[in-house]
Length: 482
Ligand SMILES: *Cc1c(COP(=O)(O)O)cnc(C)c1O
Image (tube, rainbow, N blue to C red; front, side):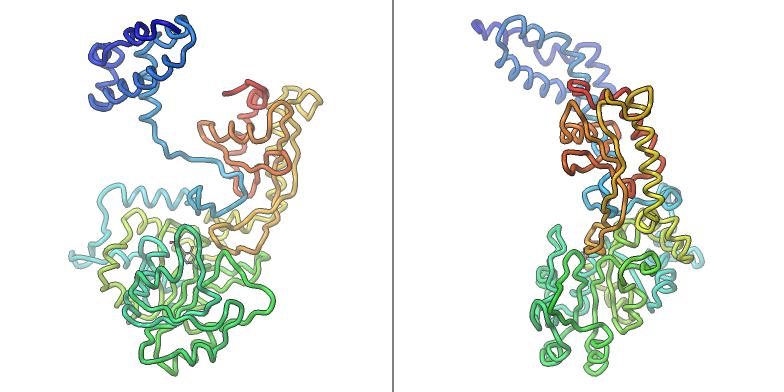
């Protein structure tokens, strides 16, 4: 195109755009700096697009309604980026999707107490300074049988604090089979180094015996550490040392026995058909002095690192400067207390805590939910109902495998059911992308050219919303949705 410079000269000046009534409105709404930024960035993109225009008519089109375009861009930018999503992945503790969903009652408690002033660190009985851990410490002790307990920002922080406070500057004996990386940069040897303790590896990757621990004990030993291997399992020719066996060695030597439990279950999951997973109370009863675990994995609460065990060790940790660095905020403290209170009745906890409900829901219940969604989807897609040959997709219910996720119960497929959508005009990955761009995004996964929505992780209340997205099949048509 010739006369490119003439085209560029048609771009309005920033100051004249700022005087436009629509932009003035934006200035009132978002402030001057933000509006100015919106104008500048839109003009920048406009220049680029003008450069790519092949005709004067095309360029003129780009220059049309500039204030409106700026307003739209600004409004988009100023919208919250963080949004609720529908989890159709079947991964219950999906790290990318925020791990454990919090129940309504827990959120309500947190909103009520943390929304205004609270007695977070104020003792109402004495009118003096209180302790933020006190609110949930009594419940944690009741539930786990521990003498004392506290919580920090996350389990990685809990492990770091535990190692720093109890074994800083000394050796920590760990089995080679437990020197794991949990993901997201949590590596046991790194935590050790950060905590200022020296790693003393014993045994081999697949086999470690009590005698390996025993011979490693020296004047330098600060602690024995056991680590739940979480997202990883060694099978076959293996041998490891139980907490119970180590407890005996600990008694003899007086060296503290610490365990990073990772997920930290409080209820008996065997009752729901899962393999045995050592619970927090069981690990403490078998002789661990201190255990740490996450608040937002199988516990089903807010992000936190919970520490429970012998009073003398917990007190030492509470006094350590890192406990100030890693302290939890009022939202977490209040939500954690609320979740822990639900555990006072373990049976109703499996119902009322969303992560546990999803985990323990019978497969038959999931199948019924999938059938319901499939029927509603078919009905929405083509008004006559049913999967007619003209329907823009085949919708079926398939059995699938859900997962606990978050490095919890890693080896276990949880029997589940998914709605499988096989679009006829567009690809499954295009449908996956379109679902992700909805106002409440829907996250599914693709298997064998079909989009799968696993109903184990979909809240029942979201089923009508999901079906509605398939109204008239527009989302499945070529060019039906950008
Ligand atoms: C998940 C996990 C961690 C990290 O916990 P966060 O709460 O994510 O910080 C540490 N150790 C083990 C064994 C884990 O499974």
